[in-house]
Image 1 (cartoon, rainbow, N blue to C red):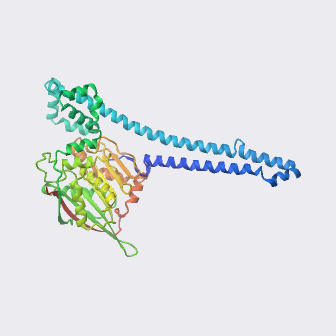
Image 2: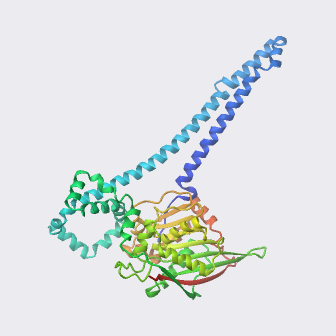
Image 3: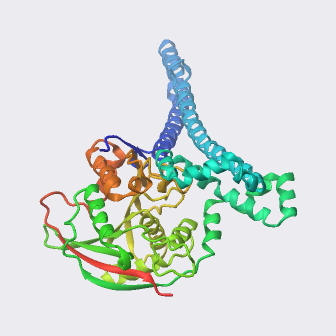
Length: 473
């Protein structure tokens, strides 16, 4: 059972705290200017002609007034020193924001440097692999892998996948260098920094590998109504339960199926409001062989979505939304597991640009989305199991964006597949989210998702239709 969760981003995230610090600094700066302006106005009192004339009639009173004004303006607790202190506090807050942001960037750059060093060392050792493979250590390692120990190792040390993914761009670039033969090897040895230049990002590396596969073309067919679908969701657990229901049914030749749920509510004024929830299962068949690609939820789509390239599965989702009758201005929530989360993020980004649909919320479970941009109009809730390898395949931790809430929990089944599964892992993570009623980021996300989450007892009509997305060419 998942008992504790680690929440980052959202209303209580670092980005919001940085913005709050910057806003407070701006308020102090304005206050300092106001106090300084008041001090200048107070000094003008001393030059008032009426006050100067009173000096002749009451020299003592004039002196007392002059002393009081000077003390109020120039004294140790006067307006000018107060303005200076306010300005100093403002500058300190601005400097703190800059220091925090610089520390974040430095940490990211150190990660990049470490990944480059790891990949460079591996590339430079590639010519020695034939000799290492026949060594006692190499033979023992091969036996260890064949014995099935790799799965248990990765499930216990999922961070290895994050390190490997972070180093992948430089590794791919180095392999490309070495493929040039002796000249490439000499260049790598003389200037190893060159190894990182062609594959400067994970997105670029994924795009290079994706070129091995045909782009594909989505065809969409309706599969009717699902009368066994869960009722209207009340919380995050219900959202993941419905996603698991669709994931369980999308198997074999129907592995490309998704469902689109229409939620209809009748308000106190008698008007009906409509919102939509889309459930997107993940990869079922990797289809590694590029000569045969019957389905679109495969390795090729994983690569293209991570690379930020055009995805035929996003095209299929768009067509399914059109056929289901989703209105341009009706709120849509996309819920995806693994690759389904990648597709949901790319679709939300595309719709925010072209205005075809209004995706306001995305929920992901076990998806490597840390490198993906989140449009300002979209609120993301990302669930990640610390022992799940898949969310770490992007080689980066989720940024603390104001509209991206990342929940990390721990669920260890000592198996890579089970650590990634909805039923054994992410249902428990969702339940832990629902139990936490105090975290400000989660509270703000729930409040924003009112069009999709219905309190118990609120009448909501749910119509669930199923759509099969597969490769048509």
